[in-house]
Image (cartoon, rainbow, N blue to C red; front, side, top):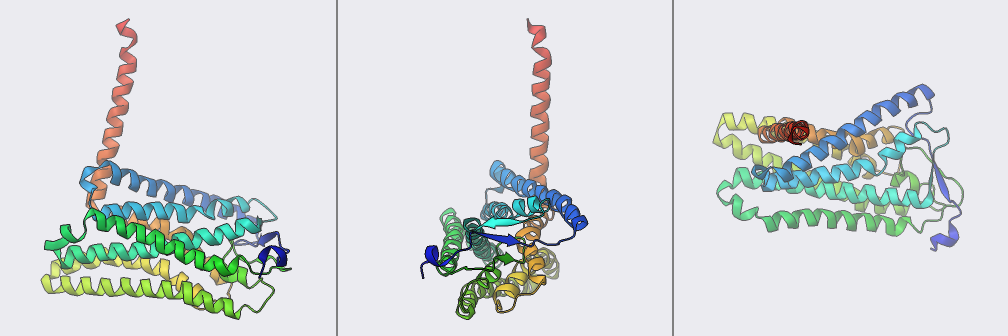
Length: 323
């Protein structure tokens, strides 16, 4: 199929989250504040992890990369969604729509693998503490991060391989705030059954397999800690419960939308908010505010900045007296 010749659609119309003007104004304020919060939160994690030598460990290296992916993932569609709340007619070009499909699957696919890598890191730290430094060396950590980007890239390119050349000859209304693959493919002028099977094979299996690996790793960690001591079990369960909540909020909507894309529901676009917007803001909260080392590093960074600012102000005051 030649997409350039068969497709006559040059843009898509996005219905957004709501058609109510009052709700759109509320959403504009709410998501603008939310977007600034998770951008600042994830940037703070990256700055703290890179600047504090005490956090130069595999766990925080992976956490810094997770924050970077979260920034990318939350930025592929959120700024446009916020701007669209102030527009009556919400449109996106054909190339812009394809770009959104490319980036959402690149970043979500990469984050899935990175979350598995972080679970593996915790598994080695708890179950094989004596070999942790040997197993989780810098080369392995770098390889895990590169693997997450590679999987994300292969995943999204395999989706685009059959999406770009679909014939779009009329319907162009997408009932979402971004170009979601199941909804866009349904607008193609052909039987979408085969396309939906490909989506299940690709996105569905990736979501289910990575979720299964995470679930198994958490079970192994909890069982291992349970045999050590009840106090360690309580601490591990307290930490992992927060991680499990993020995993469910991230993977639940992905599995619901992509494992069974044959039927789209109005709730799909609401569920999409969880893995595109809410999860990136939960990660800084769960991985920093519940972590003593991160909180100590943040306090140290703030104190250093305040001291340097005070010293610069004093030097500016004293300069005139020197002349």
